[in-house]
Length: 303
Image (tube, rainbow, N blue to C red; front, side, top):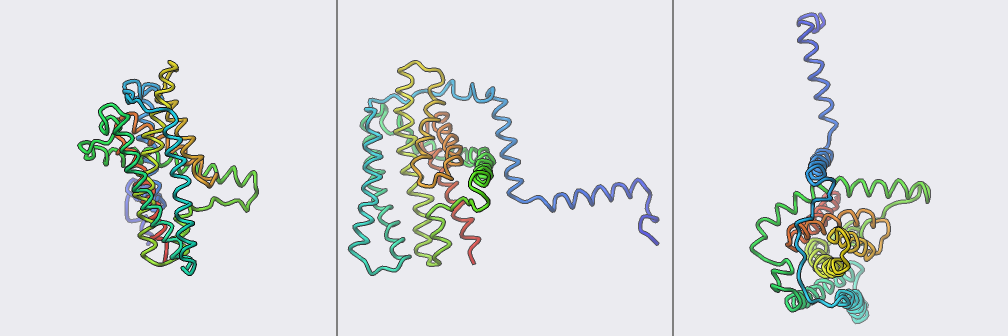
């Protein structure tokens, strides 16, 4: 006897619907749920802010006396000192294995990064009104900044993934089916070498030092000086224009051009969070969470 003969047609329909829903939910991944939640939050933000036009109308400018060339000097020192120090160290120790050489370069990056971060903070303390609080480094806001950063990252996550997919699609259309989007150098190290000392260093570089240094420079210095310059010109929406300009610079500072669209989208989110909250901890946390999640995803995929 068929089971359908033992139940009413109405109940049989309900069972079919329930089975269809069960199969549907089995095909949904956690990543898709996260992306859907992010899209809903982003859509709500668009509606609430008139498509972003009203989002930053109440964000105050960061008063400062910083000369416009200062961020360029810091960028030049950073981009020259780290490679020179790393190359010099490798020349002094030529017998290192490849993974040890990579670890030494990351260690030097961390040491130079600490010096650069301290130097940038000293400059900010000197040039910003209200010193570090005016710069956006007020430890009393950390308890609000971390959960807000996670929420902001959730909102922008589907947009970043869309930028990556579109980059791959257009890259395939232009350069053919052999086009591929290469991983970041630090993520490639994780897949290439299994030594945990190197992997720990990679995590520290990606999830701690890089977010700290890059946000101090691109958000704290560049975005601020650009906004100040645009405000002096009485241009409309100087906050959004400064976010776009500093985000373009942030993306271009990375070697792999295939990452630029996704990095630009992520950077706009980090720049917005800085302007909206006035706290530099918020974009630092967004950056750290994004990099940290990528590192953990690669680690989990390793045997």
